[in-house]
Image (tube, one colour):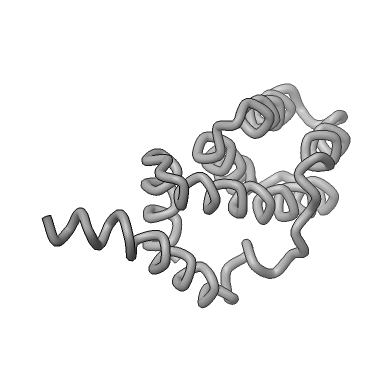
Length: 126
């Protein structure tokens, strides 16, 4: 019972506080992009990318626009791990990641368990 109280009442507060303290992570080092610009920015950055990278970007866009914040963020993490991204692609991913994280944070605070789990995993590995 005590854990449920913590999880439902204080969990989102803790996550928000933990996020605010993560200034060393790549997520907080780039300005937040307007959500309505994310898809076009990522699509433009990956339009001349190899097919597999373009498909990963398309998968992110579908999840982001389909209101699947945890899936979208996980997809961006996968893309950002690629070693052969151009500087334009890296910047687009970093900006999209910031916006996707904010969207995921809001979903987690609203009770989205997938978003809560993804945030917990991300914050515990930073």
